[in-house]
Image (cartoon, rainbow, N blue to C red; front, top):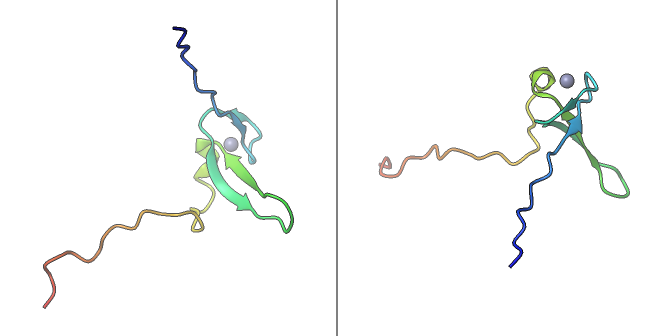
Length: 71
Ligand SMILES: [Zn+2]
């Protein structure tokens, strides 16, 4: 049996701000095009702080309504 361990490829992206390849890219923007698939804009951890948080992405909403508090 030749079960090879497939090492996950390091998702290296180039930062859109400082144009430095980072191993921990952060999605800062998603560009939607009229035709064809859009592209994702990445930034490094440092530059990502300068970008506003994405509101378009699905965020996990914390259950604000606690059960048993009705009445
Ligand atoms: Zn950067």
